[in-house]
Length: 459
Image: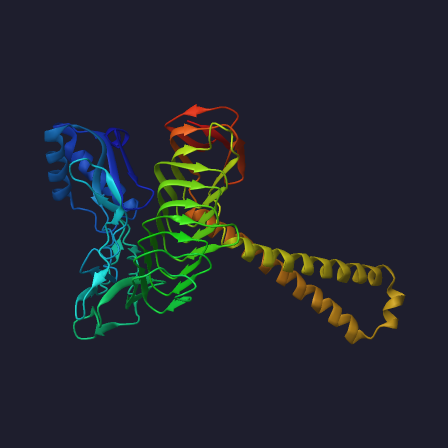
């Protein structure tokens, strides 16, 4: 009996979900081993351990395969059953990302999105999948392990969308283009403009989607809640949209013209101007001397970035960066341009509160070192100063925590990566997070710029 105790190792895993056994099983000592293991299971306070008969059968079966047991699972806990989260099943490829891929060549057609956004009146858009709670588990000690709480995500009903309470379905109430923005599902009525948009047509403002079959020219302005599609070019115009922007002919802008898009951008080229998007910016050929900022990625497969500044939170993927003529070109990743104003505002408040707090503490210190001067102030005024010090300290701490929270949220989505497929030229500046590298020679691709041991490395 004593010898059997020394010849096995019984232990509970750190998560309490299994009892593991290491031992060598021999037929002549099996009965003694079973008794000893059973006693130790009771000493460990294992809930519902197997009786001696079941334990012997279990060890016999194990020994038939291999009598030298290592990490043998003797007892298992009951893991929690995960819930079914509340979500939607889409009736079509309305929001598929990317572009149509040619089945023969394997190449993406950057003129044709994979998503099919056009819908007709009465068309089923989506069906809600209801929440189902999970089931709690139990570890080997009988302690409950709570199941994960189900997450419920259902888009809100927006314009031109009907929700059927009996069937839990969304359907289109009009012909148009489906859009999901800020968790609101809408169908945008499409405003089609056959001619150029310029001073003769006047500015365009539409609560749905806009399709321009020709160009958008000098000084024109288009504002749309939904997607904007331009079959020609955009030249020196103001564009603002709550959806995506597709420009088949490209964008040519001067510095004082802006394109601001809440969704993504797809264009043949971008030449000049200020371009801003919240999702990916995909360009077929080149971006020249432009300021481009996105909370997604900048993607130019095989194309060029020449001059200007690219700021992309989730990475930059390009064929050629810079030129043989050493045109200064700046590529920045891992930076969230949208938080600059938020941080600036809070940092200004922090500076104001710190200044006030320093003055208050200086005043209170003088009173402490010279108690006689307290008599010149009423007790009420003195207590007010003390209370304000406490309030200012709390306000300062709250502002600092807000700044850290904003930074942490931005960093969680950041991707510090630049990929150059063909050529990386001199005088191209690479910025990944807080790190900066000025390229001083020409490199042939493919090249990945990544952070390695705290510094930018070209791999």
